[in-house]
Image (cartoon, rainbow, N blue to C red; front, top):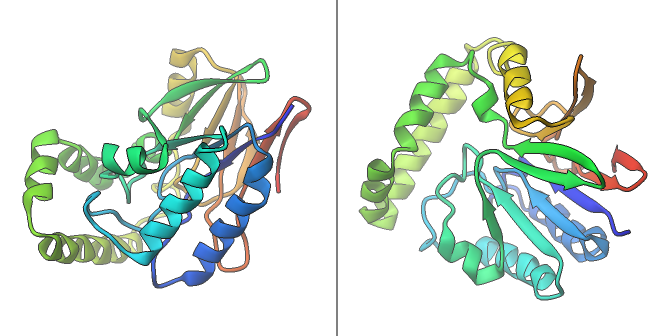
Length: 234
């Protein structure tokens, strides 16, 4: 059977064309052999609305559409940077939007997938911020603003986030293992796949396997391949 691929935290932007080149290479080669591709958030470095246009956005849409038109399913879970990516973008390229937590059967193994930011409950300030920006009325209000205004707001938020990270411990920015175990138990799964923390690893926890997708860098793309024979990073 064909493999299923999982990626996250590409943080595509015009600033780093080498990341876009890696994405294009993956979509034009490995992904062409896939049964499905799951993008678990932060495909883009930030997203200010489906009405934004750029050569980068056009490229990404083209690559996804090229897969979906061939019958290769592409799924997307919102990240903390691109949580405003909406229905129009998805419709334009055939992408299927999934909820924050989603269960999928991977060759007989029930698996929970998510971006991962919701598991980092020790980062109290971020969770407070997340609750605010995920309020539908705030999102509607933000999307009503002119594109240039939204861009300036997004740049300020991104700059503050980068500054705040310098003063946070690595433990705070990682998942809370007790809460994560509770979520795994609540969904009744054997495996969890998530991104967000940028710490590529496979953890054998007490009652389940936790696979963490890494971020993409100019010379490295973190891609999880799952087949009927198992899983591996390629």
